[in-house]
Picture 1: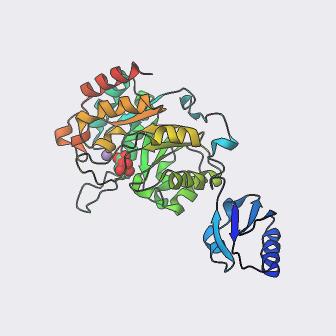
Picture 2: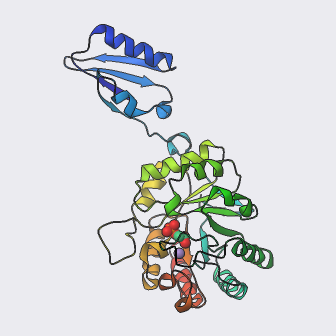
Picture 3: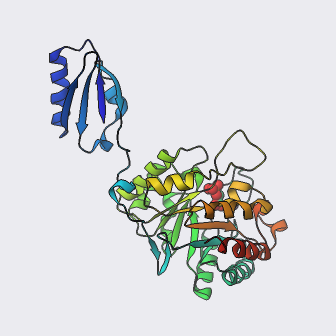
Length: 329
Ligand code: PEP
Ligand code: MN
């Protein structure tokens, strides 16, 4: 980090600031030019609050020269992280296919969908039990019962399960859920992220609706700082001025993340698109861009789905999408 000091700063003021920084265990390097003086800070600056340094009267500007995320940074961890879910791997060349309905609705629905997606090559079953819905009057999910139905399929079909958590108080219900999803709306629920840092299950962290890549990596850092380094990032589209699609699929986020972090990166073309016919081209684009997996919504009867029917693929459509993307792997 570099601190640019005001031209009119006196020697005494500068010394006071340098001493203060050194007392915080940073090494400093002074560079005096004709018009500006720059203090170079050496040490773990991720713990520093830039705004409070900017507020010091002799400081003109503060700039980071390294990223504020350390554990998620590829610079300090060159090799790809491979997340191992009881033998099923994601990242480092292992491609994950996660599929299932937006909402868990019934035992019959879950059994039918699990059988179909597994046959098509899915290696994870995903279903929402706790649903973050825009309207309080919309179906909120079967909650505990939904988790039980997912666990039933895990046992019957031997497939690992993924489900979304919305609140810290629900953590006990997720004990046997193999991968815990944090949805877009909770990407910056820092209290939840901290609690998930104490768990050992992998966390599938979706990008917030209006969050930058750096904010997203900082959220991953929250979980990692707590000790849980098994994180899978999921691009699901962001809010832009475009309204034709549900969200705008930020395809460039995939190669950017692959460069910035060692964590696996997957794509959710269903929530990005909002329309079933768009899922296939977006899934292909994600694979071509280097994604480590896809997460796709599949329903046995999309027209009667309790949530996200419009973007849900039938098992037949899903089978064809998987056939298509396999050509690119
Ligand atoms: C979901 O995965 O069903 C979901 C609610 O997605 P998102 O958090 O990306 O909106
Ligand atoms: Mn959904």
